[in-house]
Image (tube, rainbow, N blue to C red; front, side, top):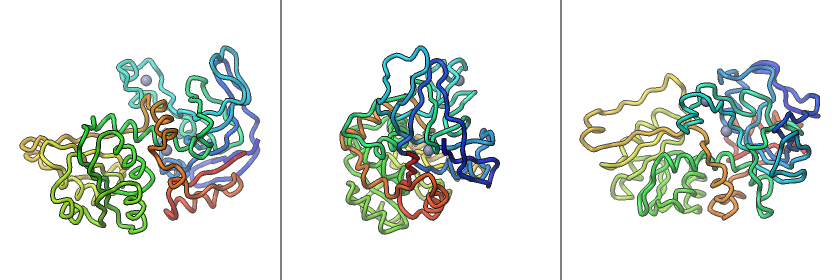
Length: 333
Ligand SMILES: [Zn+2]
Ligand SMILES: [Zn+2]
């Protein structure tokens, strides 16, 4: 089969690899769409430490089951599925207390084992979630990032009738913003430096949009119950922190460099009862994410802005690095 192969950090090629065969409990999925995300860029650049090379990346994907391994029940050949890339060990303390996304032996399809920038990929049957007929493969490949946003909503413990500010109108910020509106956020605001992305945010339901946190607080006439930092940029996070109202919650959702720092006033956290929470990847959130995509809560068509063939993987990566659109996907077959 054809696949993207990273022999080592910084080198990428399209080459031939043996077709995967399913072990017991696995299925082989013919990949119809696989999204590129920031983690893929880190894997390409050698900045994601758990990655073993050579590897075929790709963890946001959907496709069609073409082969069943032994002992697989409840799935059939030609089932259309989205695949949770999580590979949790199930035995460590974090797994045993249902926090598998913090697994001490964490792994993921496309991050620590071969993934879906390939015609076929073998995956555990239990990681497959059937897609309704109304959800096409491009929308199906968006289920993984939506599942990350569902986990964020769970972490925020969102209350009905609340206010939300999202800083960063990239794919993740926009997905979370759309989901939050059905989860209880009635007053929604978005900050981004790019006016085109703010226009889109407004079309997707943001009542207030601005190019700075100060402006958005001004226009909203007050701070916000939930503030989500979705840029990974420390300066943006610092500004966002100032927009949390008393009793409110600040979430770090964007992936910042490990050495980035924010200044937090302990007095403020104490006196104004500010909660600071993180949200990392997915945690049993694929099933609700499929429903969110199928129900139309997420405007998937506007989130996927580019679809490239596998042969144009390098161009797809370039588009992602240039932030040319929102989600860039690859269609291997
Ligand atoms: Zn990702
Ligand atoms: Zn574990």
